[in-house]
Length: 463
Image (cartoon, rainbow, N blue to C red; front, side, top):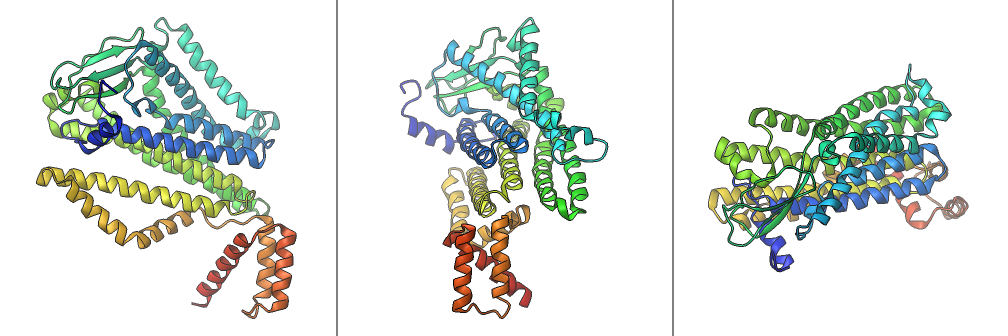
């Protein structure tokens, strides 16, 4: 790593030097890139669970493709995870990835609205036609691929016209306030940038385009439409006892789409507003923004920009958990409990990380060099109050993903309920319950959880 030094000190130095007032956000790029990789792996794992549960089911296939597309989309800045040496070949790889990202983005937009095929509403019943519903999982990504590749092929400027160019910016040691060394992808317009004070560092800049701006906004609108569809379907299916399971699934999708529509929608609105007020600019030259509009404008813009980037990860994770819960809650033993625990842990870690970063920034501004103090201020309460905080988060997760039991588990609950009528389990009743569990194929850990859950319900009713 001769161009930036040893890799671990490089990471630690830039993460420790994050400063929104001066535009030092290389460390935040590294954090986002690492978390995007983690989120991608989680979504791929959820997609794998979904398809393995019922590989021939059209709704499982549909959800599998949607989760894989979302997993690809959250890797929006993978190229910042490591300080790669700049080269035309690297930028072409980046461009190829971005073409795939646009295809997955268009795929998600169409799939959001198409969920109505599996959770029908009035006037859109035609979408439930097996010829449509059973082929959506492959037809939609094929159409998205055809549209994006056709636009690129027919455009005079090729990929640069449709998705924008790509740039590799490098600032060597001792180049503060000097022009950055920038390599442009083939056909991309030249880009000029000024190095910051925390050189050496490397980062990549994706170009923009009209299609890109459109695909920035459309997912929010398609999520809003899908949210409305799932709300109507949820309420409609809930009126019929025979479609109760479908109603719960529609509710789960409604929550996932609502999270994306609200959180990501707010961030997109912020970006559009800032571009209208301050004009479009690139991350290779944040210094000019501070010079032209002041440090407050730069700080606000960076908060909104990185808020948007992190909202992609959070809403993607929320969708993944809610969609998987809806599809698999009656298919895999204890999937709801596993998803709740994982989701709660992710929220706790995310809130802790952001609180630590925010407190460190505040202490840095107030005391100067007080980042460590900010870490102590946040870290100690998180350790001391970890249990009540995690309990509150877990209660929130339970609201999103209520207890769900498979048919075999419900059969055991019925048997346990009969045995618990007098609030005492006799030896004979325990033998019967063990036989019932063996017949149903339930292991001891799951039986212990089910009985504890039922006992806690009895205690709540008695109180």
